[in-house]
Length: 93
Image 1: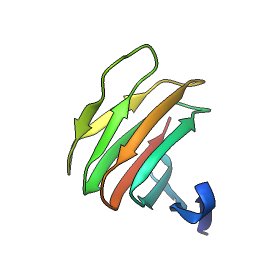
Image 2 (image 1 turned 30 degrees about the horizontal axis):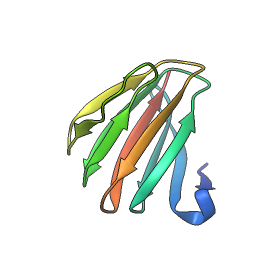
Image 3 (image 1 turned 45 degrees about the horizontal axis):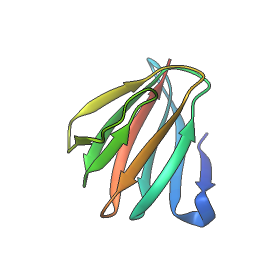
């Protein structure tokens, strides 16, 4: 069944589900800046809008638009900025 998640005072919401490849979430981020931690490797694909991402050890933001995917390592914290409401799909490995 589905599980709903809410973070950052409701500014980020997602629905967790199982895909044949493993666990996943589909969600939306309101405009804002967020710090996320990972407990597994995450493959994040922007589905609408745009995310600016700063991975651990980096000093510049990188832009991801619809159908762009980025990978975040397990056990790290990364920064995300959404300048408009943005949707995403995240696969956990």
